Image (cartoon, rainbow, N blue to C red):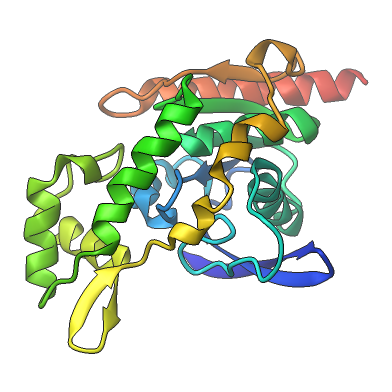
Length: 257
């Protein structure tokens, strides 16, 4: 696995977007994983370990999240989040892409599919939120609580994650003990003698505009893009077969043009 950097130009500034690529030389398909608000790319570590046997796996830190840079000027928007992922797709020169978006990441995935549909073969929307405004309020409330917490040791962080179900999502709910330790390290940062959450609530500075500036419905997307509202089973076999199917179809359609 390689950690790489792409660059997003916004308001005359260049921002570093950090992403991991787990390459599979036998596949030309790229699975792009997009996390939710105030999360980071490590949410998809377990998924990567399962799927890299079949495809190239890319985990992206959205702008303002994880190790990617924060905006110096201007407000966050659905468009700027999508552009941070598109900068990665461009850097990889990926031509056959399937996007997995979790919660807010699903909204970002929709946006990307609408404006860059010529390289997108399929989209998976996980934990998709129809009532977006309520979702934003829930996120803000939850992480406002977390931002006030500090821990004296990583062991305390792990115990907190085990008992606080709000943190359990697609990736964290079935982790082994060693994987849980890694997950905990990735969610916090050192602050002198304590550990605090990595989350930066400034990302939500104009959250009310996320869903209002640009709305896109699945039915208006290109018919060549297959959209699923979750396709994960226990061993991910259905997902693997679906990806192969939609990518074969896209290649066939391109050959006919």
